[in-house]
Structure formats: C-alpha cells, structure tokens
Length: 286
Image 1 (cartoon, rainbow, N blue to C red):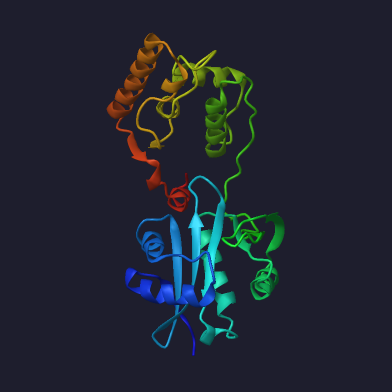
Image 2: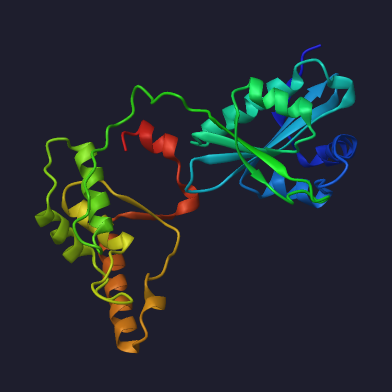
C-alpha cells in the first residue's frame, strides 16, 4: 500500500511521540517541541501515513538569510521498514528545502546508525565533519551535506560583481550590482558609489564615516527610477549603539526620520523581513 505524505498537524502529536519513543533511545523530541514545530517554528514537519496510521516523519529546519536547510530528525515505524519510506521522506524533505530557497541540506547522524548512514550516502550526501560529544549519551555525530540545487534556473539573472572601493560603501556597492543586473547597460563606478553613499549615509558610526541605512539606499534606488519595496528586520535607526555622544545619536535619529518621511511621501511600502518571498519576487522580475 502506498504512503500518503502531508504536513503534520497538532492532532498528530500523540502518534509522533509514539514514533519518537519507538525509534530513539535518547535525545527525543517532546510533545511541547512537536507543538512548537507545527505551530511556530521556521520548519517543515512532513508526516507519512499508511492505512490511516502515521508511519513516519521528517523534520526540516530553516534559517532566514541562509541557503542551508537542516534535516533535524527522520523516524520510521518498525512496521513500515523495508518499504522505501526513508528514501521517500528524504526526497520530500529535500523538496521542501528547495521550495524554501535552500541550496544545501545538512544533517547529523550517529556513527552506529548504519542503516541511516547507508540511506544518506546512497542519496548523495557526503560526510564533511564529526562533532564530538554531540548526543545526550556523549556519542559523536557525523555531519553530512548534500547540494540539492545542482543547476541554475534557466530564468536566473546574472548579477555582475563590483568591489567596493572604500570600507564604508558596502551598501552602495550592493545597490550598484542590483541595478546593473536589472539594467545591464548601466555603468558601475566609484563616482556613483560615492554619490549613493552621500545620499544614504547615516552620517555617524562607531568611528570614521557613517554607514548607509536601508531606508537611504531605498531612496537612492527610487531616485534612479527603480520600483522599490523595502523589507527591514529593525524598524528603528541603525548604528545607535555604536556612538556614545548624545548629539551624534540625535543626528542619526533625525536622518532616519527624514528618510522614513521621504519614503512615506513617495508611497514606498515598508515590510518586516519575515514577509520576504523570494520566489514571488523573482517571478515578478525582481
């Protein structure tokens, strides 16, 4: 009988715990952990069902801002062993990771878990490290990795490289590369690098010249004719913790407020970074 694969839900937690206790002697996930993974974690918990019974699961964790996914746990009921379920769960874990823009999937496995090691190595995972004293019983872990995106998308965009010429112009250099990718005829040079910095700088930093705020860079892109949507992880002004003088802090706050007012006047949408949808942005041509 074929397996049915679906996202785990909270009513599965009791069955997940039975699987956990059956498959692992230690380092077990708790009911609280399963509830967290299902409701709130940046994760994918895939359940495998056969004849109405939960027969296995795979748990994949994701980290915002990285191209790495982590296969945290994979469990198969004794009654379902020998039917290829481990391979199928692993494939679906990889599919979930690709869907979250991961290029690599990593995992840890005990050295004495020969069946799991054989599965991973047959599936293209390579061992790259050993972590001592990893498990609850002080056993080491073998760390494996697989590149799950082998080829660039046919519709991927070529982004040229521009090396920043000053230590405080990383933001302008990134913006130059992004604009060049969207408009290949554009030139990239130190003159515009400095001009963008002048437009986007927060004036002060810990020492030396100020860095650029995301709001300032968004305005610089807008002024050059690009459609802009700003995603930020910190809503307030940056670099305040790096200056001691109250006067400098006031200047940074004032510059931030001016940038925000200008963005609001221009109708630029500002969103928290958790709403970032890279596949959607790429589909729109971004």
